[in-house]
Length: 314
Image (cartoon, rainbow, N blue to C red; front, side, top):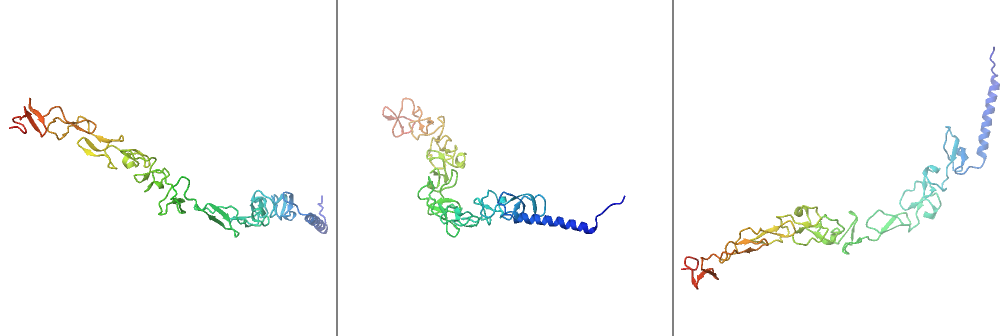
């Protein structure tokens, strides 16, 4: 059996006819009014925005495309805009990220979709600690003014603002608002209001044998506690015959036990001992022989006469 192939002229005519029909069909489609955002589209030219999103068949034709939103149209994401930028709820001509700039007529007083400076007076944030009221100027700059110092709870002398540390200070540069345990030299610097042992403390800590540093108490810096036994950093404990001269670890100055021997310095008392309250007391033995009495002047007397063999005796 012989195969039949159409003559070459016939094949060429068929191809020309097919291309012509396709071209005319596309031209007819493109000649129709452009499609708005969200409408299905076969080509970019079909859309008023000039962009048909969602190509699924390669080339410039789109089988199931959707027209993008034109500049100035409403949007919720960059991908829905022909420009690729959704700013202030409208498709914008640029990313429009500069401070005090916007892309909606409501913010700039201009045209939706065109990035421009915000209306003068629009609230903004200059990113600085030392300003309280920030507003856009007519050139698109965020300008701050005002002074936040002193902050709530701080002394009125904490009126100098320190931008480098985001803090308030007094005129000589002493920082305010310090937390417990931080180094200080004046109480107004501390949030607690107490500067003790050169650190901010949680209490006035002004009782006997109280301190606010770990070196003196064993507790964390900034926590008021009793001074450790054997220390007297504030020199509050006196020295004496029955005194330790240091703190006892329980908030008082230390004393020697009542069994400790001492000397009260008096001739007419013997076997002296501490009373456990810091005092030296004399014993019952007066140091004179029997039948002799101890008299002022460190003298033992018997019937008004010095006792023989003792101080003051013959």
